[in-house]
Image 1 (cartoon, rainbow over the protein chains, first blue to last red):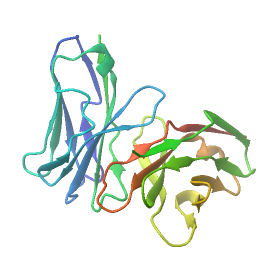
Image 2 (cartoon, rainbow over the protein chains, first blue to last red; image 1 turned 30 degrees about the vertical axis):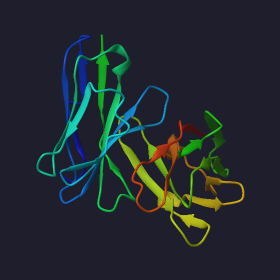
Image 3 (tube, chains in turn yellow, cyan; image 1 turned 120 degrees about the vertical axis):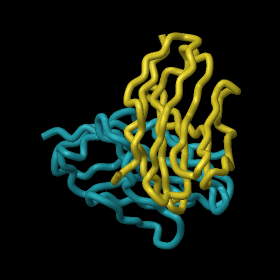
Amino acid sequence: GAGVSQSPRYKVAKRGQDVALRCDPISGHVSLFWYQQALGQGPEFLTYFQNEAQLDKSGLPSDRFFAERPEGSVSTLKIQRTQQEDSAVYLCASSEKSEKLFFGSGTQLSVL
Amino acid sequence: AQSVAQPEDQVNVAEGNPLTVKCTYSVSGNPYLFWYVQYPNRGLQFLLKYITGDNLVKGSYGFEAEFNKSQTSFHLKKPSALVSDSALYFCAVRAGYGNNRLAFGKGNQVVVIP
């Protein structure tokens, strides 16, 4: 595809459920980022991959959050035992050189 | 730690008037500075960046920004605003080489009035 693709676009989960959010980056982009954007706030860094290596996961808010990129392309962000405070838009971005990021439209997660 | 402040929640400007969106930053070492724009139901789009060199950088859609090291600012400007410029604007910063973690401001809603 021409851009970064994220799915699903919307996800409603009951508190305590596990969710998996998918990101398809632009083909050939080495770097992949996950950000969390709460309502009315700017994006907050979660984690960063270079190819399949997760080089920085310091922004993950708890051990319920887990991200992977096993073949260096598609990435999945998994949230276990979701809580209401996890409700946010989750943004994925990819880049060639980590200077100009290309963002997907995001997955809006609502935890009831 | 790196951080960005965007002091105004909303900027209202008449079409055809100059537009300024303010940003100040805090970072250790030399900053890499960015502006992104977010239209409704769309992802953030890159506008421009400052890495090094000329303090005035030009970007997409007629926008420009000026890096001011002494004031730690990176204000976004456009000489003549269009209604289509109405969107949410984010300033972002990261430390230089070796740091891939971007810190974003909370964003400024720009409303251009016809």
